[in-house]
Length: 427
Image 1 (cartoon, one colour):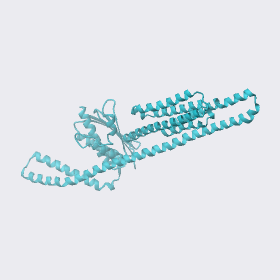
Image 2: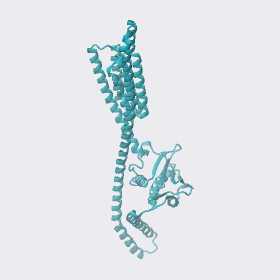
Image 3: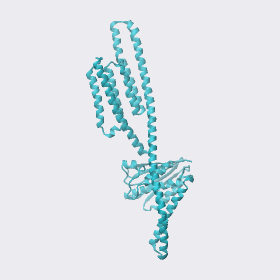
Image 4: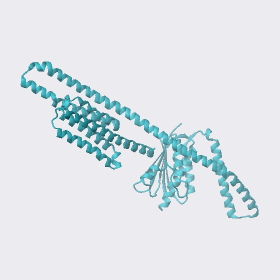
């Protein structure tokens, strides 16, 4: 499911980016409100000019985010940078307004919580350790040093016993409580966020699978109706050609027409038979089925130069409906052959391997390759086709994945497309 997984991942990152922008605006409003209240109440601050500068930098960096390209908006690095700026701004304002004695020092936990929600767990742990370190720095350099200086100037030893010692213990206890809170918050929120993301991805994959199955079901219904509607006309045509053949003997064209009609009837009869026997399908060895199928397919494409490499360690790879896999593989092979012929390099490389109950079929063509967008959609969405309806790769993927297989495609550096089909033993 690489295509849908990529779409979901990009969507989640984009949503996280805008959540971060909103969060930063809320933080700016809160910090600005607290700063205005402190200024009106004459709260002791080292430099109001620096406070204003920090707030303006925070606001500017948040406004700049609106003008970033989509590629940067969906990057985790940009999310980490935004959280880091918030953390530094809160730390700077606390440094300027009382340090550890400032009652709003718990605001250092805000970036920790946001990082745990938006970014991987290891980033959250790094941010929590940075917050703990900054709290410790404020503890050593804050109001405690001022009180110690006050005690030294007055020589009041009783002040150390009755005021400074309890105050110091209280501050160290607050720091320990902050350490526990930051680490537990990072661990718990990161864990729960990871579970939520996994559930969201699983739900999205289930929804996408359901949509694909609904499309496949619609195609199957159309095919069944077409087979039913074509049965009678083909039978009538066979009867008419038999009558004409009795009058026109040794007519090569008429003989070819009869052969094609008989082939159509054979296909429809086979479709009816497989549709009636689908409940009774049992597991079968996939390797010999695919090997025979590949050898038969090669005979039908004499215009191609096909290299078939076989490797079999005599282990087992049994799956249900092995013949269905062969039919799906033929669709992929036909597309690969057409691509090679179109680029005037009519050859294919096929590698069929069975090793440790894992079967793999590698198909290498020598076509022009595909764009990244088309490659991501191939097999997951019906594609436009000049010769057909564009359902071949789509139905092939659905058939293989329904039976527990995987289909992976990638462009080759030398040109062309490489398709890897893998199956595990299901016996």
